[in-house]
Image 1: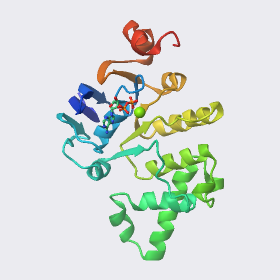
Image 2: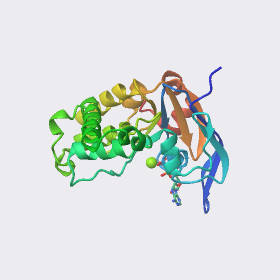
Image 3: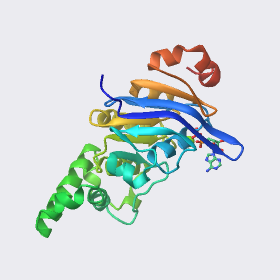
Image 4: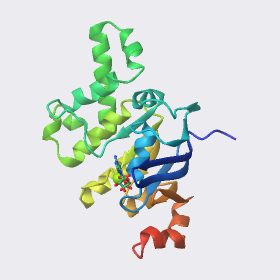
Length: 251
Ligand SMILES: Nc1ncnc2c1ncn2[C@@H]1O[C@H](COP(=O)(O)OP(=O)(O)O)[C@@H](O)[C@H]1O
Ligand SMILES: [Mg+2]
């Protein structure tokens, strides 16, 4: 039996009177798209914050890629292979698409060693070649020289994904990538995530159920800080408890 890529055990977190996470068990297998759904305020973003190390839990453990990362900082978890794309953008709006992605490549933990080997001019060329590779993956070639601040909303989301991918993560965490997107933009985002899913394991928090059921290999449902089930999209859709707690009659 192979070890899961991410294994969260009995993770709990309280904010004053709010029990935001209650003994959450959550496992992500390498290669899967694992969706996390649940009503507003269920604790989904809080959970992602704990997995990435932005917040530390009161109790419980987190193992990732064969290591106990429970006490590691966000930076150390990035170095271990986690990447997240933020609901709030961390793109430099005054820089071009190419420069933003090149910075993300350069910030990668192994970048120091892999680019130091080359003479500065060659290192620069290789850096920008690699950045162009990620730009092409997200279909942003024609915007390579565009200032990030001048991109349409959908292209900015694509740029964020290119920057996350440029860190060559083992696992990508996406917190509501479709938020604020119109139907056309959502459809494009679904296609991009489908494309990314072939090369990286994905944890996807999303409200758009059509997108979730199309993309996910497994779905976990969080309600009031408690993980009530993990199953295939079909099984989750059919589960009476899930329907009652979350999906209502919409599914
Ligand atoms: N930093 C914080 N301080 C206090 N309460 C918080 C904090 N972050 C989240 N909460 C509370 O934890 C609960 C879960 O929030 P959140 O994780 O944002 O839910 P979701 O992403 O599922 O909508 C909510 O009741 C929220 O008010
Ligand atoms: Mg949230």
